[in-house]
Amino acid sequence: MVATELLILGVLNVLTLSGLVVLALWIRKELEEGLAELDGALAAALKNAMDSITGGDVMAFDPPNPIQVAISQLISSMAAQKMGTVEAMVTERGPSGKFTKSMKDLE
Image 1: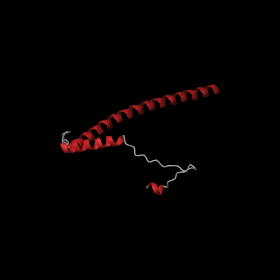
Image 2: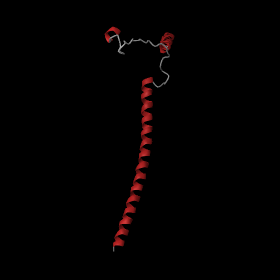
Image 3: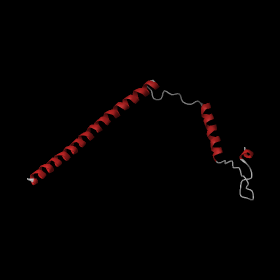
Image 4: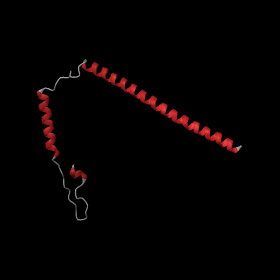
């Protein structure tokens, strides 16, 4: 009698686990299909937004004029010169090991 009940419970456990596996596989397939559909819809929305911004042509923006190029080169050369420069300030210590200048003197 007990063996029959245990056999029935074992079969029900196996059926439950197999049902969970089938359900997980079905949910995974549905999610993959949904993400693929969402990806296509998102790509179409981005393309429409870019077309409305640029007027249908991706290269509708004006190229930079020569003055803008010269200013950008000037700024980049000034930044390159400043990168190697470190402005250090040495503060002396007194005989007790404490700094001799206060923060007010440094400003």
